[in-house]
Image (cartoon, rainbow, N blue to C red):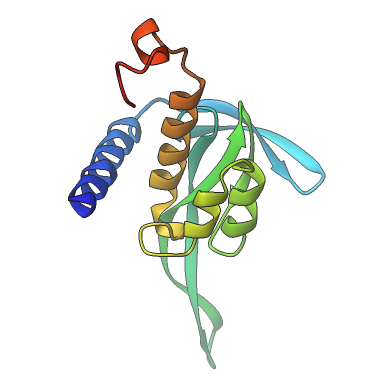
Length: 153
């Protein structure tokens, strides 16, 4: 029963992310070390913590004796950026553990799940959606019925 509920939750969050993926670009401030740059990115997950993506061309090269390095192929890859408001920094497989703990500081249960099944880097939109949904639920005002315990959350 609990597995079914968790699978439904993940499916719900994934469907929500897919619907947000094709929106208009948003102007954000990208932090690169000590420098900043204003760019347009697509908002993948919106909430207390935002997740943006930026298409970046990646070129593969090979080395040949005749010509040295030659470009073989170029493809567009989505690079993710995490932030609060419109100030974002790049998040990748190498730094996502550290940045999730930085941006999701009051979520020790989530910290324990990072890197496990369903909470790896490839699940980043789902992780951020999960956190935002949980944070919004905790911050929303309770009705009178909820306060006196007639409704369980």
